[in-house]
Image 1 (cartoon, rainbow, N blue to C red):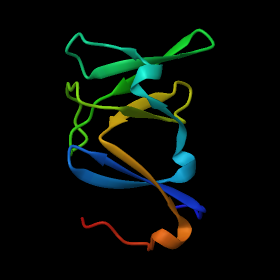
Image 2: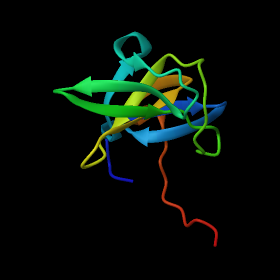
Image 3: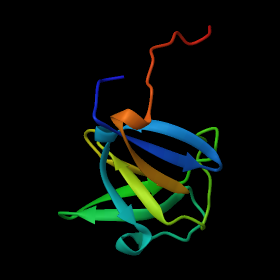
Length: 107
């Protein structure tokens, strides 16, 4: 993970994830987005300069699913098209609040 001064701890379906602070292009509250209530995994749309970016609902295993009970979305700096995920909780953490260590995944 790149060295950074800030991190985001996000909660999806009761599971916490840690992202580098620079990973999120921007954070939007629900009332600033166009809600999508058609039952799909896309919970909302964010429109900037005439371009729409979807915000997806993910479960604890990062599988897409439908949900209505969310309040914020984080839009990631994905190129060429930004993409968002809706989160249960978001907390900004400073470098002193976390201890990031390299590891080798199993397998």
